[in-house]
Image (cartoon, rainbow, N blue to C red; front, side):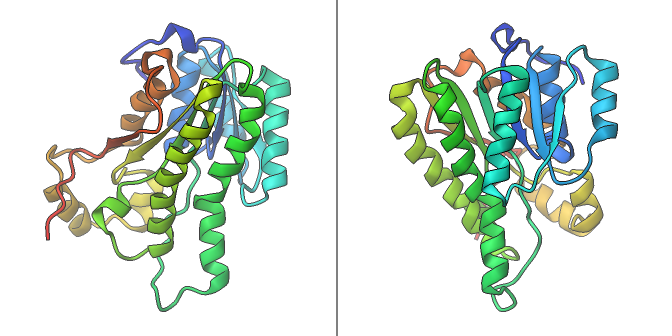
Length: 255
């Protein structure tokens, strides 16, 4: 990964990322490693191959912790493990999410709850845990949301609702944690063409239709999200909090 910007203050910082071993999360992990940060991440699946690749490329290999983020106790224990490994956490990136398609009629109570437990609840409880350590020196919490709710997308109402909730939560936490020098911002990607999206939901027709809505006629790639995350984590954005940074190629909503 080429570094388009260097933030010297990120070198040595302790970074914790949810879902940091695949998709956008893997690019975030590498982006922070390239800055000299110490990175731990949680992932439901084994990420040994990715860790080995990073170890071969950088001197500070990431710590991968297998964890189901719907288990709040296990998630917060993973944060303790990360802090013990690399120092008190300075930056949290709530990146993990699941945009599995579902309809209003077919969604059960259990499926709805699981959607929120993956896409919204972890953002609150990582902040709860991280704030304890950040209280003495400040820090940055970055909640990855989505422009899906701004576009009013159909096909995954639970996911859309969760992402609207993320932005509300971000503003509430920014207000509460500001006196402790803890910044909380949302990072809102558009439709990023990860391997998962290309495999499961991105057809030539849907991709062309979405591109028509973008001002920039180029599909987003996972690496397009990294620069914004680095900026929100670094001192360059030290007076930004409670904000939502949109990276979507300039989607124009019509209708």
